[in-house]
Length: 253
Image 1 (tube, rainbow, N blue to C red):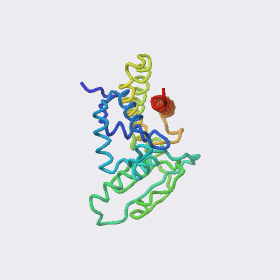
Image 2 (image 1 turned 30 degrees about the vertical axis):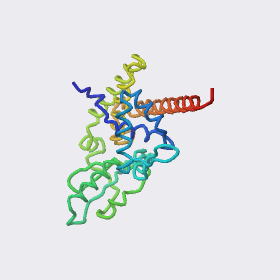
Image 3 (image 1 turned 45 degrees about the vertical axis):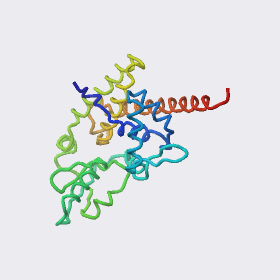
Image 4 (image 1 turned 120 degrees about the horizontal axis):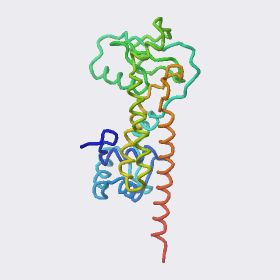
């Protein structure tokens, strides 16, 4: 039975997750193989995935190792949440006014809005509290007329229409509890910790980044962000240890 909090992670996704968490996003084959082995992925599986990722343009291979392609480096930048600014009670709103758009354009806009944490009130109407310090999406500006507005029904009521905050919070706390349980079990459960962390990061990327005034009590996003930062620091230490081992193996005895 699949663990709902730790679903299987294919080798390609595991390698991408590892590199997306690295700065700079370059690792040697040995570092990647060592990490994947720790996460429960065999060396042969990892090497096949690396070959396919280079052929598919996901990775660039050179003397330094394997590096994320520019497309995926941009993805790394995109997943970083925008800075927040004090909220004045206003909402940003965009009404799509361009007609004749094809299905691919509509799908691309929905993906862009999800990445920017903007919710769809109805077909062609996008909105969220104006508390993020970033401009409207260029893709959105091409097809929409944009406003700042204040909902007459109240911000709390509109927030709960647009986002299921209770469900998001419950799942976030479930991830935190599962990670605490894995920590108690130690290194033997490292593959599950990795799978949980990958799923938790995907969950964090759907955080609506609302003003504190609109969040329910006990919102787990900050705790999840802290746990992820600690995990990335642990990965960096692990990679450094692998690097030191590699140097030691090449030194004359």
